[in-house]
Image (cartoon, rainbow over all chains, first blue to last red; front, side, top):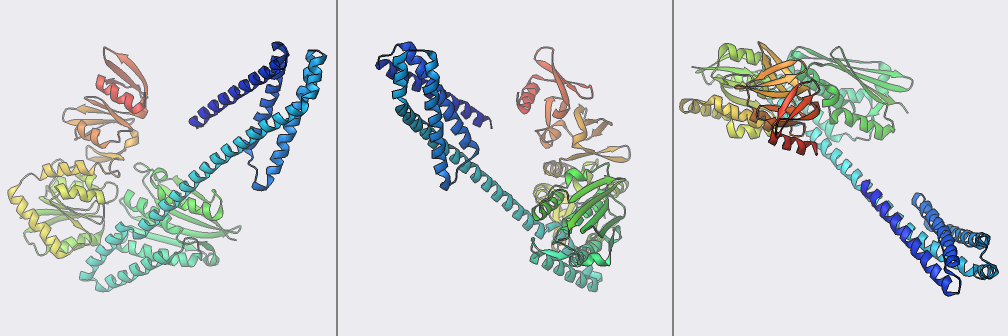
Length: 344
Length: 248
């Protein structure tokens, strides 16, 4: 931003110098026609001032509005109109200075020449401005593009890492390892749950809307595995009315929220933990509420959740173009996340 | 006879260790603990020779628990995945087991411990170096865990106003009061985020966000006035460092 302003100052300086040079040349020319310096300078000054005003106008115009390929003709018309304005202003203003009949006659005769010179000067200015601003525009677009690409890459990487979930995977395998020794049937069951869960994670398409019942089935696999890992410490309560089962929501949207709830519920407290998930239909919205206990003394779920919650918010924004679909509350050592999914 | 503890929050994970340990009648498991607090209490009570320790546990993790132990026993870590922790283990733990681990791998770890135990009695020292490496992990330097009497207090780094050297300890000063931690100033200087904490004096590290004013004091030195009103001496070199961080 600062450098832009700096270059803006430089540009303004260059513009002013051009104006002064232009006025000096014109004054010299008029003087060579036999007018006294006073008259030559006054004429040159007024004309140059008008011309710079016109140039400034066209430049500003092009800064905020870039003509399309087809509308260059309008630009030409604009230049013509501005040139006519400049030339006729000097034609009708300068006589008021009262420099005498000879000068007034000269003004009349040189009108056409002034008109063309002005037109050329303004046209030149317009061309330079158009090139300059379109280049800046181009640069900005490029920058945006690379930024968007980077964001997409980051998200992709995050997704991959999430899918692997090394902690979850290795700890689950370790639990299975333990079960094999004395409860082989349970070990087998857990292997099947884990496989179903992983398969579900892999085939999910982020853009797809799925019925809540499917999403909850998938979530249940995950919760069952976690329950085996953490034993009696983890309890879950899922309440979902019959009519919600068919409500649609983006696939894998609840997963990070529940993972988050487990992370803060299980790792921030030492007692038993109940995580509740409930769904409701209200005014054409599916409202999902997820609650988990946390310890307000030692953790700051708002701050610490990072990609989990903000990732969900971002997805909701990308899909529904709204930023008001998720809210979180923390009180009485209970952390609540509420998301609203519009039913189209 | 080797006296051991198992500290892991997952019951099944503890069971694996117990099962594998059946092959070693010379190792007696005194207690199983489900979190760091329990582990801490059990270590103080039993003074074991060996502990099996998980890293990710509720409230305080394995490293934070070890920090609070005055004379840490030999440690065999058992963890699922933590790049940074593994780096620390490779250098200094007796051994570490990546879950899920085989019985052969477990036996190797125990053999290593038993042979170590006969030759090098410096379990406490290696554990200390290990913790120093582990503390540099980004997950570790968010908070400071201290003991106050028999209770464990978890201080978020954001609540720290300044740290002051206090004999062999470091006093961590927050709005709630001062807490002693058995670490050195150099340790905190190395592990706290240098963008937010500056060692301004041999005996002081301050949180930059707490500074309200810098006043000149005697020759070459300054006084930093904190939000709480505390006046902290700033040495000549400390002032240079502070200026660098503040960008003035």
